[in-house]
Length: 169
Image (cartoon, rainbow, N blue to C red; front, top):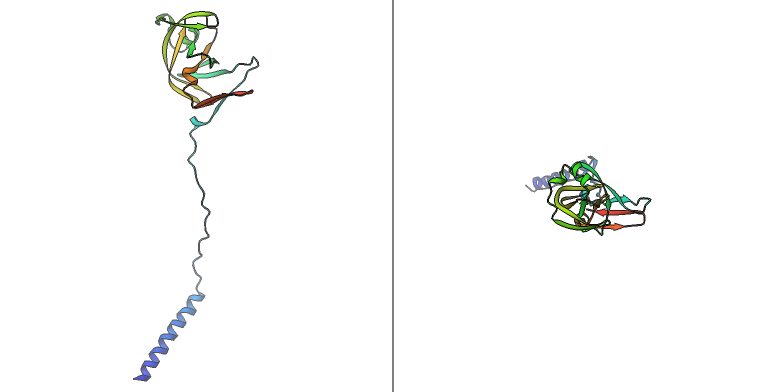
């Protein structure tokens, strides 16, 4: 009986040794190389990029704006409390100036004027868009439409540099 036990032990040891030898010759699956951890940020929405208006030769910042699908040229004026439209620009936007209520008063460079309050669906300058902008149509005395604080004040920031006006939506 002892003879069978020794044979069984030798057989078991031989089987284990043979298995180790066979596994040493088998190609092992490659160990994946450690991968660098890369932080991926979501793309910044286009509306959060700063917009820029170059300073004109006259020293002013003139903005070509999209107002409800219509292009309007504005003089950017941080001293103007509101966005103000000339009667001609109001007509181009589909607002009939003669049908407005001019009960508000405002001061322009030409003196005091009557103003009618209007709401513009949006004003977008170089991609810096502000929705539902309170504005005024000035009956007379305004040479050009003004982009005032009812637009500028709703941006996250704006900054005048020697070369440009930077608008941050």
